[in-house]
Length: 252
Image (spheres, rainbow, N blue to C red):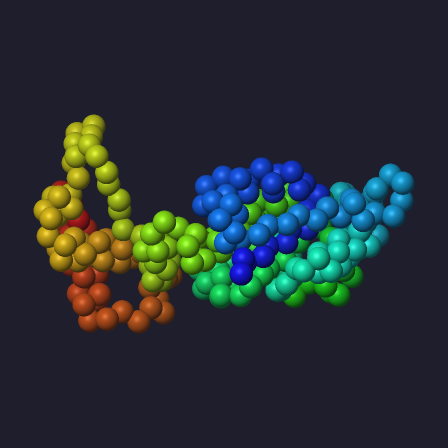
């Protein structure tokens, strides 16, 4: 059965366009995922199809009205939407790989993309199960964060990637950043591919990649290592990386 995404958005055309490309586009074509869009403007009751109004208490910007959003959500569920209703908001829980993994194990997700100053709090209280954030910054609307979540979840669904190991070896899948990648030519702009990668020795290659993943995480995201339970071998590899990193003329 396809994983079902339902997006509540004022810009369904944006969603449709993005859903035709890459991994998600192929997953839609092969029936691995189903993506539906619901425009609150289609559920506005006045003849001008208004979906926003000024904020009670004053202040700049407009607020998305409760009723059109509520009716769009109701229509989505009547048509078969399932799963949690998630509102994309900078005030929400920070999305991480663990949350994406948990979501991919479900059967559906409803994503509410706000605009303007946000959505009337009353519909959020009544309808939304969780609020998610993709980072401590503000964008113009929830569509791009929602599409990022669709992409991240889709990558973890069986059959979405040509090689299952692609998802298993991605950054964060093991709680670490990814190791460096290289392709042809072997020499480019005076820089060469590390010798170990051309050695044909799969044991050495695996060890080098594990060391680089640990080292990069230590350099760029040390917070990921604070609570990590490293094996004795991983601790040894990380110690080696640190020694090599501090060497003059280093080349890890």
